[in-house]
View 1 (cartoon, rainbow, N blue to C red):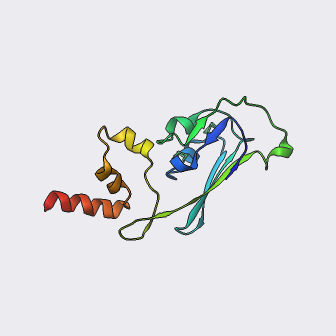
View 2 (view 1 turned 120 degrees about the horizontal axis):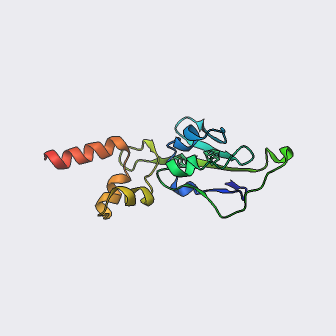
View 3 (view 1 turned 180 degrees about the vertical axis):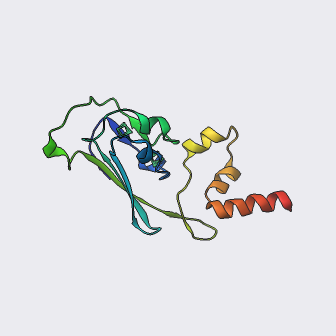
Length: 141
Ligand code: SF4
Ligand code: SF4
């Protein structure tokens, strides 16, 4: 991960690649691109384009992107391509069916569930399809 120390910080271990931040960014300062189909994503913050509106941090469901306490500074245009934070996010594999997936970070589980045990963590280690099947089987059988 290339981490330019700008006003926005990014924690790739918390990112679920939902793309909400890129969608709500009015400045086009966040780019998320699929590098190889179902292999990895590249996540980039262009700090020189960021207007510090805070939309991305407000809507990010996991807190992966946040305003840091670094002082915001205007940057010369020459630093446009170096003042970036970039990271490659590799897909995990579902332990049951091996489909590519992004694991749900604990920060998101903490928001959704008051009771979090090993069974819940195991369920969310599965891909959405296997998770549905597992829940359905438990309810029906
Ligand atoms: S703070 Fe605003 S302008 Fe900057 S990256 Fe986030 S959404 Fe875009
Ligand atoms: S930083 Fe947050 S909003 Fe952006 S893709 Fe990752 S989880 Fe989604």
